[in-house]
Image: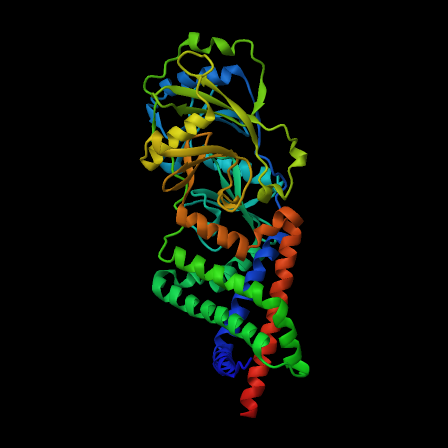
Length: 488
């Protein structure tokens, strides 16, 4: 079959896009390498499980009295949480900007204690019990050291007095480490953001999208035309650079095409998006009618102290107040390691729900409360919900960036909501279009389809190997272009 009519335009386009596609390969390949490097060689936390406290019945019995004595009529979140000073009542206002803490012994407020809680958590997660702190600040926006991929805001930024400027970002409502960085990782993140997402052009979004579109688009076309050339051009004996370039093309064109096509899809799908919406708390809980009724706490009598993640107050479908006792998972702390951040080790078993008014075990379940929370957040009716299920591990639609497990997945006609059962917050909402793009990006760009078979470490190693080979492939292409121009 004579393919001469196809060979000429294919070769012309391949050579025409050689420079722009090759530059795109170098830029996105080198910046892409920083991602696994940050995972492998970045600072590692000393603890991978939230701090737990021993909660006694008296802690719960004191809640109504403390609220009443301090005139707290409503709040977004109310919880008993472990701290360096024992169990305290934490009240969240203003979407987390303002958190108040009260003693359960005498009801006294501890002013500015959120800062102390953040320092305690930072030392707990880093293991730096005595290292001086260089600086602390409440961070309400994302930056290169704490990019938007981390989702959680506000967080406390705690910088330690170390040679590498180790910095912990902690979320005091979750008692969680949101991120851990140092000078090297921050530099790598800056390179990644500047060269892979081009965030320095965020203020000129159309220009950013156009430039990245042209670069990645030229790489995609370069891959397609190159493979067509390999398939249809007559075989002849090649030497040196041309021989190696052609040999590598067989193994590298499909991964490069997958990277570029999924990258284009990701770019266009998120063009103009202001970034993650962040955590959305529900309406404020009405606490005005909370009574210090001893009859409602009879169930506590004689109950010994036991480990709990937290005790939270929730508002039910009929406005009733519920105590939610978060029961820690049976997995011992030492079994939760570095991989738990990515594999998604749940920190909680099914909770206990107690009706605050009667002291009886509530007939409601976490699932019912999650569905109720979804209707409030999304403005839908219960009939609009098609399914709901608990999520105990991270995946393409709900990944490790969200930090929280377990959550409840609530499906409805327009998409899927993920609800934190501990407080009814909307952690993430994925539309149908978001779901399709998420699958594409997860499997074609990040190669998560390999994780169940080879694990995350080997998957990252294979991706890194492919990128390194692709960079060598690109350099060979540049050498061929330069030689061709010199011979012209």
